[in-house]
Amino acid sequence: MKGVKPLILASIVAACSTQLMANELDTVKDKSGEINKLATASQTKIDNIADNMQTRLQKFKALNKEIDGLSVYNAQLNKQISNQVEEMANLNASMDQVSVIERQITPLMLRMIEGLEQFVSLDVPFLEQERAQRVAHLRKLMDRADVASSEKFRRVLEAYQVEVDYGRTIEAYTSLLSVDGVEREVDFLRIGRLELIYLTRDGKQAGAWDKDTKQFVKLDDSTINQINKGLRIARKQLAPDMLTLPIQAAE
Image (cartoon, rainbow, N blue to C red):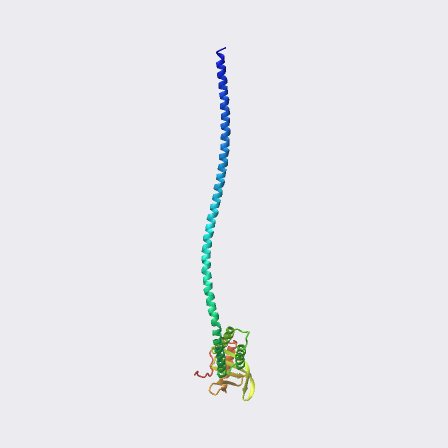
């Protein structure tokens, strides 16, 4: 029995050692689990911090790009503002000149109207009433305060253009004329400013304006056919064709 006791004791010691090792291993496992949990939590925090930093970095880069874009935009705006300031200065200078120009152009227009009136009175006497009314209308227009100077000047130039056009057109119209002391209705044929011819409505008497005597003189009856032809051409009743008419030589 004495030999059995040490064996039992050794077994007990071994069992105790095994139990202790098992307990220590469990403790180590528990500690390892806690360490792993802490490591996982730390890694999660690190990942969150990294993600947060990456997000902030992206925002920082985006803001830098936006700042760069705004810098370019502001630079362009500054150029535009400078240009607008220059234009405003030019406009102010132009506005200062408007009153000066208007003071100068008004007398010019009055002289032009006076010249036009004199020209009409000395010209071949065609459409006398119409042309005189045009001049009278211009004089009334000059007295109106509700019409801009630019519009007045345009109307004066328009009247001059009408007179210029008379010199290169052919026209037929009907009006009254004193023939042999009797006022009669006649057909007028105007060929530019070269000739103003009339023909009575019965087609029996014709005449032309004499620039030297400043009156109408009778034409030979042989011209009546050509005058009728010219009247029809002017009224677009015939195609343009050659006319044989007495034309006064231009001075």
